[in-house]
Length: 112
Image (cartoon, rainbow, N blue to C red; front, side, top):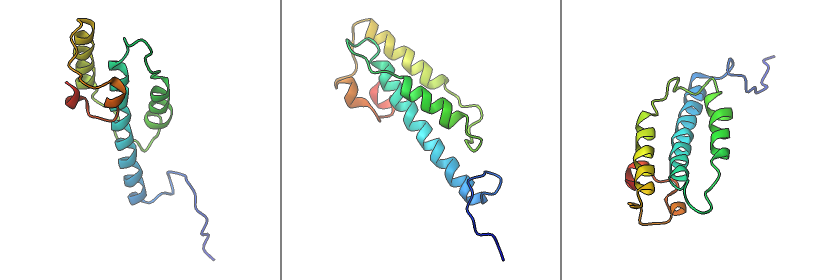
């Protein structure tokens, strides 16, 4: 009689399941990076949000997952966008018309 128990071992997952989980992880990764970008844009506010929860999730659940397909994520575009945004904020000019909290979950390109 066949053993019908389900396991979460990546060795016993079907290719379709691995692909689906990989796509979900990539989607979560992109969303977390957008939200982290928006939080870091507000770093000079009187009460900035803490980016630690986002960094913990990225580190412990996304980057450490063997199914996560992006082995070398290219973050140079996000880093350069953040540098430009912080320079604008430090210079006293704000391109953001809404409050920082209203921008969470929007892509960085819509902010600048």
